[in-house]
Length: 119
Ligand code: HEC
Image 1 (cartoon, helix red, strand yellow):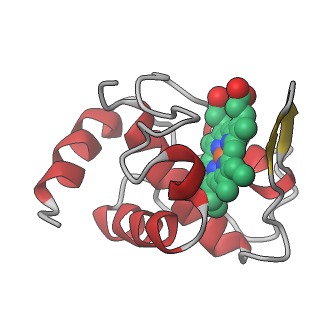
Image 2 (cartoon, helix red, strand yellow; image 1 turned 90 degrees about the vertical axis):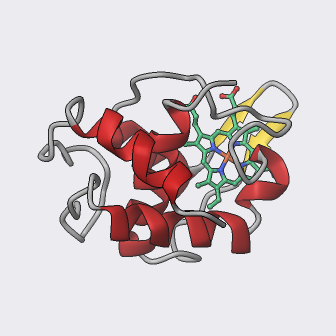
């Protein structure tokens, strides 16, 4: 774990993110600064320790790819993680109640970084 790999994409994403926009997420916790490297690092840890990496790969390049998706709306990402999604035969589990809103925001911050990494 170098940390560098996380920090560089963060700088790239930083300029693209507006830090408001939480309408429609159902989050009771205001969004943290999703560009904060500490928030991204917490999200990365969670991503690897919970089952996220099982389906998505620890670098977002696993079976259900998150890498290379490009610009994602933070509120949409939060909502997908919180409420899950069904896509054909694939099911993204809902995490609301399993993870706190704060943790879901941290995972969101990491997903936004992954989405800007290359496939
Ligand atoms: C059981 C497998 C599985 C697990 C575990 C899982 N996901 Fe997913 N995830 C999926 C599937 C399937 C999709 C839908 C893919 C699609 O839309 O084509 C998805 C979609 C997503 C998306 C939406 C990407 C987009 O296109 O907007 C995000 C973000 C995401 N997952 C994050 C997470 C996070 C964070 C975790 C852990 C807390 C997690 N996933 C755990 C299977 C999983």
